[in-house]
Length: 383
Image 1 (spheres, one colour):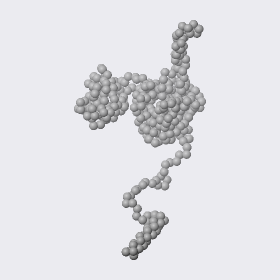
Image 2 (cartoon, helix red, strand yellow):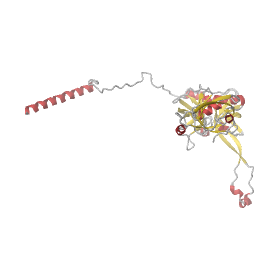
Image 3 (cartoon, rainbow, N blue to C red):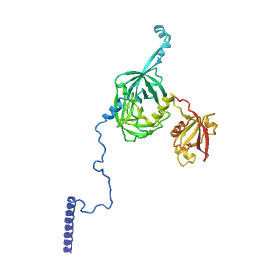
Image 4 (tube, helix red, strand yellow):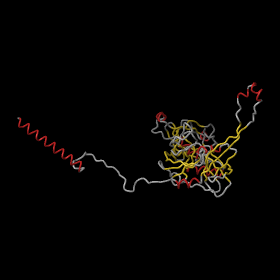
């Protein structure tokens, strides 16, 4: 028995020595011993297939800087009267307050030259109610500008200066911007002078922000601050992709979330303002809201696609056509309605005076109604 145990101990010791030797050889020669049964395949970039190395954005900045201007506006406003002046005791020593006393308030922003003969794009809120508008060119010259027209619902305005030989910016192709693209924001933040900041496109098609009626913003983390409004957002080649218009901020300064109006909207609005001085949109007189999962469940809908008609203006186009509150609008002239925002875009694109075919759902039954489109009334800009 003792001899048997001795033999087994020798066998185990020998096996341990062999296993240790194999492990040592596997470290020197990888793959000698069999590995796990699963296979993992990874993709590795080939030689020269890595990200492009950009040493500088100086060329893009130089191309766009000559097309971005500073805008200074001012207007007369009635000065507030100190409530203490209504007290007879204070009036005895200081006299009656001057009811018509006014003071001049100034504002600053940025703009983008879009034509050699003096047309300039900026934000509506930069020039809103201004009595005087001054444009400072990159070379230091100051020019008086006139307001061609503005659109509060997209926050776009067109100015014109009497000067030829300006350097217009080059527009990027509509819808060519992608999430992750490098962009530069050019403007006059805080009035310090022309400034360039860099970032990327963080998102596209941002809406439901409550900034304006029509929203389809480019979101970027390029630093945008007060005074940048109306300035250019350009791509890495210096081409205009958007007009800087708003920031998300709790402090009033940059937090890395800025919004720009894309060139697709800029061109549509600008063309109408230049041709006719205003923007004409379709309107049918309805108030709508998004279809939430709760609303979809209550209406026994399979999806949240479409828009719920929450109100109908009495005597308006929709009312005359038989549309009722509670109807769910599914399509406009064959174009699918995704939500309330897309419906607003579809209806506004209709030509006043024409008829439009609305597809809707009423009490689980699909139906189609024709409505005569009217011109959308001018709406005040959201504050």
